[in-house]
Image (spheres, rainbow, N blue to C red):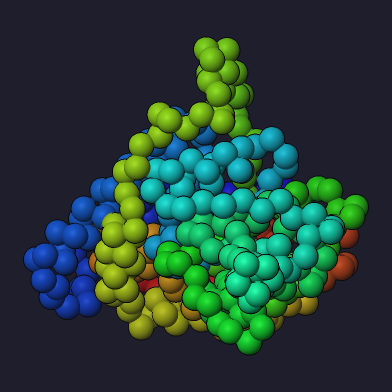
Length: 346
């Protein structure tokens, strides 16, 4: 498994300072944006209180929140995926629910259902766990397609329809789904249409030797992963909303927009791929690049921003040809080749 793009380092993608912005914004909006950026930057410190390493994954999750997108987390068991999401929800002061996806899980177990009330002799709607801010769909590929599909409307329309009545979901609403990359027995791979609904796919690596030693020392000192009392809220829905509004003002030059399109079109022509990136994938890469530029303190997107986000944004939107897969090709490897060959604007 290839390592994820390092999005959490202190060094930011290159780009000359002083690029043209989208226009003047009010001083109050600028102040709110700076406050939101500082609060979101503090998330890494809070998450680090319980999860060792994984800075790049945390940054990817923040980018998804800024873009109001959903996240697919892939990693072997025991790499703290669940703990990471729980800690993030606490540091953001967001409502959190977890669903363990199993072969016998029904759609109503996720979305909710109508239940007959003997006292009133009427049916009332009982909300499912999807009515939350941060939903952890644990091992989403272990449940049949019918239950997987119950999340489609929630992810795309941010509402749930039961018996013809549409019920809006809270705002913000983000699905963080996990899956095991090596165990396929008894699983139901997500169809391409649903994979395309995830803004990014983040790989959660096994910690380095030093990180694992640090983790063991924490446990030896009495660390309890079920006790998150040390994690304090450093941001909330207001900061997220301010950040989302600021991201939408980040300037995109026409040449950078053309670069995004050229990268996505190159995946459709690659001999190693039988499925390339859809136009939805191009808009997703635009959104994540703008969010990363804003987190980096800039109001304009550079080609390096696009390169930094290309793999996590596109790796789940392409499909290898069987012969390329037999030769050992990977989605990340193919994307690396495309990034190397498609000329970036200067």
